[in-house]
Image (cartoon, rainbow, N blue to C red; front, top):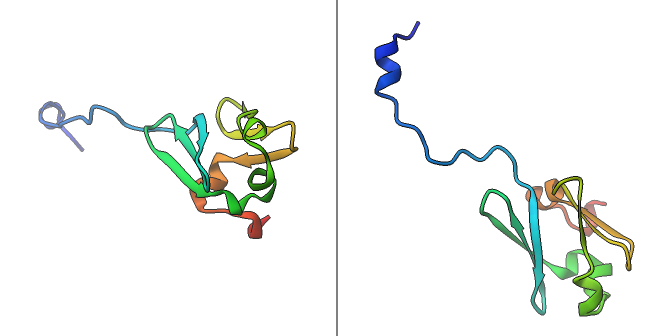
Length: 95
């Protein structure tokens, strides 16, 4: 049992992340960088996703954030990637 006095002395974190949702995607020559709503940036090799690796820069930038941020979709190259998969380190070999 806790008393109200105990609650008065607790410190609270300023930010408690509850979910990690995609906010934006960027690319360099060999990596994809996904910015998440909790402040993290996930960077993964383009080689993990052959359709993205083979796509031209305009096709790579033609992504749609789906499901409110739980997934990424590239309609021009028919590629779908989940944020959960990126967080677990999933690559093309686990598909």
